[in-house]
Amino acid sequence: MDSEIETEDKTDSRRGDIMDKWVCIVCGYVYNPEEGDPDGGIDPGTAFEDIPESWACPLCGVSKENFERQ
Image (cartoon, rainbow, N blue to C red; front, top):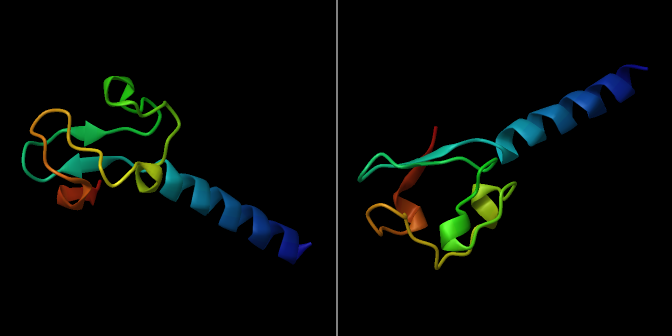
């Protein structure tokens, strides 16, 4: 029974990590994976880590490396 609880906890923790918001350190734009970036071709439900490296901040145009987990 304990192993089932541990597995569930790990799954819940991972889900939280995937759905974390990320903030642009240059302009303050917040990427919310629940909303995605439809204008930038990113579907709702897309984790920040799954966004292509070519994606840029929709407000100031900087790359993903200028974002920090919120």
